[in-house]
Amino acid sequence: MRPNIEIIWFDSMGAKSSSVLVHGPSGSLLIDAGVAIMHRGFPAPLAAKGRWLEEGRNALLDAAGRAEAVTITHYHYDHFTDFDPRVYADRTVLAKSPNRYINDSQRRRAEKFYGHLKEAFCSDCRLFGEPSGLGPDDYPDPVDNLGRIDRWVIGESARRLETGKAWFRERAKAWARRPEMFELKSDRVRVEWADGREFSVGGMRVRFTQPLFHGEEYSRVGWVLMVIVECCGWKLVHSSDVDGPVIEDYANVIAEEKPNVLILDGPPTYMLGYRFGLDSLERAIDSAVRILEETRDSLELMIYDHHLPREPNYRRRTERVWKLASKLGVRLSTAAEVLGQTPAVLRYPGRKLK
Figure (cartoon, rainbow, N blue to C red):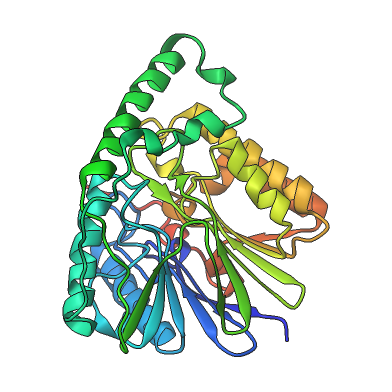
């Protein structure tokens, strides 16, 4: 039996999330059980934002109750829930390691979350140990292995590269000196660090990439894991938060998988000119176009959502992607539209915000 996906909640439905329930032959996997309220500038009344947040939470709780495993691709609150024991009780948690390739804020969130998990389900478990014994030089700089580094060689780009490398070295020092956090295992919960690993869930093969930048090179926001689910000749790729992807090598990872269903988080156009530049937008569009071109023979559905439908001009700003999908005959849609809904960001046209 081919697996199928059930859309749980996405940004296009009115609250920040990127969650699906993947049903396999003998069980289900819930990808990223988190939801967060939309930002202040989102064009909808506060009451509507609060209602969508509550609906998203209820949808996630219902989905968790039907899943045997839950993923955490990184520690942002639109990708995990801290803390509701109903999400994690009697389940396997396949999670991004909090020990390395993680920024400081996500490490703090992970410590708090696993402390709650330990208290609820694993009081006799040991959460912290000694530092790993690895030194800062034992953590390879991931930019060194990327194929498109030529753009960094002059001017401001070279300065960004130098600053980013310094930032990475400081993070590696922190990983070397911090206590290791252990996976938790009890009769009520089982936590597995997922980075670069493979698992079996509900008769499906579930693979995780090595940590990838959350956006462009040396993104201070941290690292994420992509999730690949396959069974019975069918494959899903869930990109988590790679912002488009901005980085060309990450587009290669997706294209080489040849998925049947791709859940691709789009570029955060709502932050253009603030935390997201026009150069990054063009890179993200180029990557999405290349993914469509190289997966046209396998791709049946691309859900282009998360980050992207947070401002009403998202479709115009990514027009090349939508036009190419139409030309190739690939179904490209937000999650809301898959469900027959108008994206939430378009439901209040012309609204003036104070």
